[in-house]
Each structure stands twice: as structure tokens, then as C-alpha cells.
Length: 602
Image (cartoon, rainbow, N blue to C red; front, side, top):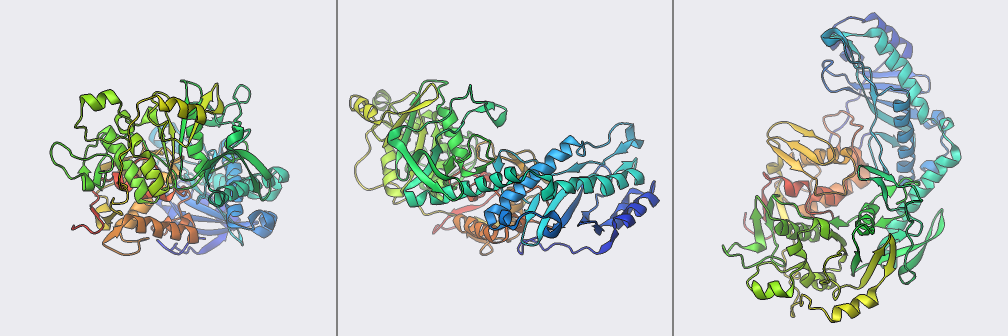
């Protein structure tokens, strides 16, 4: 089930049946640990096949990779549940959640420990941990022939010797028990169907936004608040206040399964400003909207909060590298004479990082930019009249001045949370206020107030964005890592001597997406999944990657012929670095990468 593309899988021989595997393991009790390599291959079990793709080299190495294949004739899921691509993804997600829950409840995920060097080790089964989002993953795949489940297994050891009897228990008892969670009979049919239908509806909703002149939607009844700052699960309601759209902003859309759904529509090519006092729900609203680029499980509270996939959250990132980015619409006339139309620095300030992130988003063609004053450099956003008088030679032109220009000439929608400045009121098409977690449309009143307040006057004349350079190209060979490569959580990748810090890319939701980004960088560094070798335009790179994943799935990122069940599809903007995702993305953050603007000399 691995896609054509990056690396073809190694086809392993059929070695025997479950009884043969059990016998081999027991006979090899206390044999040297490397003998486990002899069971790499496929074993037939009643109703499914088990394949050990790669046995770990020793008990202290990363766990072994394995997968099972279950034909639909055995799993018996109704064909309607996997009749389309999105329904296959939804069914795979549901099965993964059942597998993960079984691993935890049966304690299959617990490994032996203790007893020192000669004590028992390993024995655990690990599947990718699902979150609140429904993502395309490599952990469980559904195709027209059956279901494939990929997992890690810690092959048991005592010291550096095989624990044969316990290995037989793990592979010949725990694995079949786990596989039972991938059978239709294991599930509540109505609950499963509701899950698949809800995911399909969310996908359809996001796809229909542009045809209705929208880029986002927040449904009535949504629970936007989370149960804590450390949890992505919904707050109970009550006390959480459910979202209700102001009547003036309400739209109704028709979904294939659910039917009519009403809520707040966010229209394209507009400036939305969200006001309100502290702790009234402004940032909660914005955070939920940003996650609307993903489908969610039906009971998340944010299901049907929808946003076009290209949306980017821009925020400050002091110290980030910037390579050959045209930030001249926001920053120019530097005292040292630096050319800001192809700006490079290894240590950007807050405002410079915001300007770079914004322009990188435009480079990849974002439709929506999201900003929260709490996480954005204030001098990038606004500059009041007093400061204009005191400091007339300011190199920074704030976003409040450029807002109408970029919206009208780039077709952008901006959604901005701003509770401390009136600078954006005159530029806003829609102004909403969060008042005790309830949204009010205060556009008319805000425009009245803005008339009596000194604002950042937009300059007259041609658009400053029309003349901005089209984009940049990266030398693929410069992406190669010089040393160890490893993903550490959702926001950090060790890339040889460098560390890619992705904390300013808040729309990454799982380490599996970051692992996928790591895989993309490896492929690009070797000229794979790219339209050509050498220097390639960034936008062409991400377009090519997106086309490969659309056609072949996330499996196109597999490498070295070994199936990795811990990858999840990242958005193109997360990988590309500028398009709708916050400041930049990994490629833009990689200090060693060699960039050049298109049309410029190397």
C-alpha cells in the first residue's frame, strides 16, 4: 500500500503461519538478540497477515516496525464507509482511535523495565496517538482491498538475549487481540457512521467556502473554549458559552449528510477586527478559527469551524533567520542602507520577523492571514500620531497603514484580534466584539468612533504589493543535513548541526506532521519530490509535493523501504514556509538553506 514516489517498499517473503511464528520464538528463547532478524517477513494469521518489516538491532534501539493487512472480507466494514477518499481517511481515523484506546486499556503500550542490564526489556506495541483533528496519516490506511495497520513493537529481551515465550505472547496473542479493534464488529455502527459522515461534511464545507464568497465559517453552537491551556479537548458546556453568530453576519450552508448549517461567514477580501476586553474570548475565537483548517472529531466542539487550507497565522519570532525576502512594503530606508527588497538576517527582530512571515505567506499564495496582538510585534501593527511626530524617520510602515492595500490588491482576508488600539477600525470591513464570550457586530459603531480618532493614514498612489518580487528559489542540495536528524515533539527538529524551532507555526497539531516535514526535507535535499534538481522556486516545490500527496497519499514520504506508521500530512504552507502558516516554515527557518529571489543573480 506504499505509493509510488520517494522509495519503493522492500517486499518480504511469506515465512509461515501464526503457529510457525510461535514455535520459532519459543525455540529461540535465550538466543542472541540479532536472531530476531530471521523473522523479518510476512506471517499468515487467521483473517490477516502480520509483517515484521524491520527488526531492531538490539534491545536499546528504536522499536521494530511492523504492519498487518486485513482484507475487507474479514474486517466487514460496509463499502459505503470507504466509498471516497475523505471517507477512507475518516474510517482510518476511527479505527486508529480504537486501536490506540485498546493499546492503552490493555496496557499493550507498556514495556518491560527494571532489573538492570539482565532484566526484561521491550514487549510494547505502539500506534500513533490521535488528537482532536482528523488527519491523513500512515498509521492506518484504507483502500479498496482492505485495511493496513502500522505499529511499533519492542521485541522482548533479557539482557541481549531473546525472551522467546514473552515474544510469542506479544506477537501471537497481543497483536491478534489488537487487530480485533480493526473489525467492524468491534464498533458501534451508528457512532462509526456518524463519525465518517461528520468528517465528510466538514471536508465538503471547507470546499464550498470559495463558491459562497467565503474563506471561513464558525457554526452556531460551537464550543470554542478548551478545558485547559494544556489540553486541546473542549471545555464542558456549561460553563462554556456556545458560539452564536450575530444575525448580520449569519449564513446558512447545505451539507451532504447533515443538511443545513448556520453560523458566521467570513468573506474573502476583507479586514475583520475582533475587539473586546481581556478574558472575554477574543484569542479563543481566533485560535479556534485557525484550527478550522483541519477536520475535527464530531464531539470536539470545533467541528464545522472551517477555514481555507491556505490560512496562515503570523506572529513574532525574535531571532529567526530571514533569507532574501522582500519586506520593503513594511520596512525600508534602514540606517545602514540595507536593501529590504531582498532582506537577509540571521537574527530577525520581532517586527522584522512579522514582516518576513507576512511576505512569505503572500509568496505561497495565502488567502487568509490571522494575527493576534498578544503574539505580534506592536510596532509591526500600529504607530500612533505622537510617535509619528517624535520619530519622523521610522523605517517601519505598520500593517494598519498597509491593510487596505494588501486586501484590495492581493485579494487577502485579514482576521485580527486587537483590544488595545483603534488603528485598524477605519480599515476594517467588519468589527466584532467579544463580550462575556458572546459575539456582537459593532461595525457601524466602530466606524463612527474611528472618525474622531487619529489613524494611520494609508498612502496614496500605486500598490506597494504589486511591485513585490514574485518569490524565491532554494538550492536543494543546501538543505542536506550534516549529522543526525530527529524530530523532537511537535515543534522541533534536529537537523544535523541545526535545530529547527517550529513553535511559531502554531497550526502544527501533532509530532507526526513534524516527522513528515522532516521527511520532506530529506527528500528535497536529495532532489526527490521536486520538479527539477538544483535551484527550484519554493512555490513550485510545494505545488509538486502537494500533487504527489494528493495522488499517492502521505506514503509518498516513506523512505528507505521501511514503512513508517507515524507520519501525518502537513499543510503545504507548513512545509513551504510562508504561505498561510505563520511566519515561516521549516524551509525558511533552516539557516543553512541557500535562497535567491527569482530573477536575481545567485
